[in-house]
Amino acid sequence: MWNIRELQKVATEIQVAARKVVSTNPATGEPLREFDCASAADVQLAVARAHAAQLAWQAIGVRDRLSILAKFQQLLNDRKHQVARVITSEAGKPVAEALLTE
Image 1 (cartoon, one colour):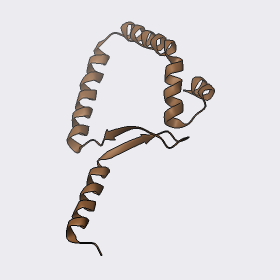
Image 2 (image 1 turned 135 degrees about the horizontal axis):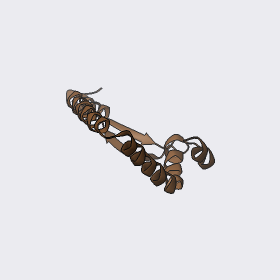
Image 3 (image 1 turned 90 degrees about the vertical axis):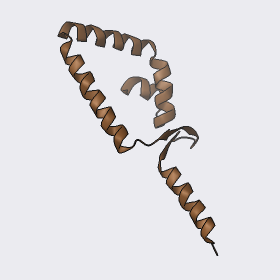
């Protein structure tokens, strides 16, 4: 039979666990990283920051935005094998598929 202290401990552990998300490798089940869940205030702050960033991005001329995106594309291409390894560990895709589809 459970006593009240044991039940409180289990309830506390469940509440703490519910505020965490664990990213696992689907092929091995190995935990990759643990993340804290965002609170409602965290989400509101992120949305406000994204909105401000969008306004700043909009204020940049089209040619400058294209230049920034081209540079990003080049940086991503330079690191494509590293990115593919991350996709493989997080999504369980073979490296070849990660390179071709992501």
